[in-house]
Length: 144
Image (cartoon, rainbow, N blue to C red; front, side, top):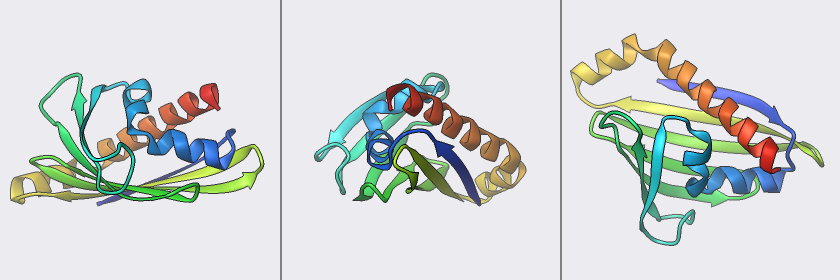
């Protein structure tokens, strides 16, 4: 399943890309995330690993930075027991002070029960993705 969210954000491209690619910022804008825990590698650099721990529930994601081609794109893979998510953030300068963020998340559910859950929950998953990206927009524009 794929979810794509596009938002125009009033922050210069390089600054927006830096804010997005810095996983340490995640708890500052993801309301359901408790903390970021660095595991290995230089944070934010390809090959580095970190854990995203939720405030509620047991869906802890292990993240691996796949690519960091800033200010144009950042890619991360998230892995949990039930699902793997490939996240790509692309940043297009619309003007010196405005950037279009295209956030693409591709979900791969593990096992037949989780695949069925993913099929049933598509609308909620897309809504959560949009909610997170709108929260990121508010965060970025405050810090821009």
